[in-house]
Image (tube, rainbow, N blue to C red; front, top):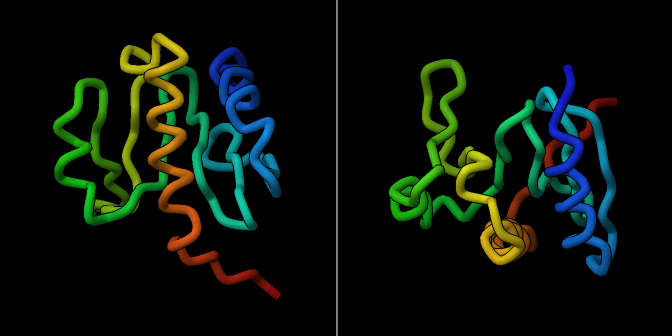
Amino acid sequence: MPYNEKLADRLRELLAEVPEVEEKEMFRGVTFMVNGKMCISVSGMERLMVRIDPDLHDMLIEKNGCEEVIMKGKSMKSFVYVYEEALKTKKELAWWVKIALDYNPKAKASKKKK
């Protein structure tokens, strides 16, 4: 599935100095892994999926352009969608990148399939 290359390029620029960043195609787009853990994804043409501290979930979903991620009918407290309308400036995008990077050291890595 196609994803928003311009948004992905903006993320690449912000993550250029972050060590151990790897890109993987997943979640209907491109995912930026940091330290082997999912950090932030460009999901489709209009939004990011940002991995967040679950303690911040309720506060963050109140922000303009932010929405909770629901999978199989269940709210995923460690992820939010952020729509492009809330990412117009570099400062706005950098704020969400910082939220994801701040949580990354605490986030659990997914189990690798053997």
